[in-house]
Length: 166
Picture: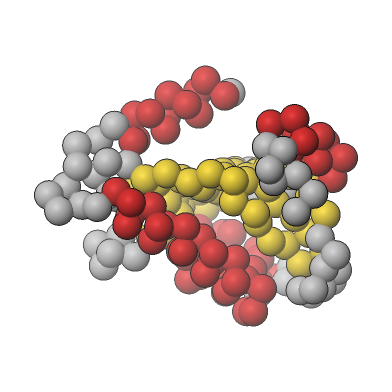
């Protein structure tokens, strides 16, 4: 799985750059977009976040929503909307293709009883983003693995000690 993901990301990130594309600014813009996406979800709910940040041709692939397309995911998230469990994401890495039109973010998904937490890790995620014709980033692929707090905390301690316990 890790090698497959690396191959896909290597292909995406190896595209020829667009004239005038600033890789550092493109990456910073993607990181800002991901932060705005998660803030939007906290303020307006998961369905509203999907509507604002999910491309029309997107796919969600995790253990809860495998194969769900954009329209189905939006409808399902609105029908099961709850305020009893708040989700947030903590990005550990982001990068953008040399072309400036594709990128990815990945990190730890967390949940808590309210916007104030306390939050506990429960899985890892990867999101592939595509810059739209209007210049905005929207995600085209979202995958998560639900692992539980203990497994995620062990992963962070071993692989990302600087992020563990934050």
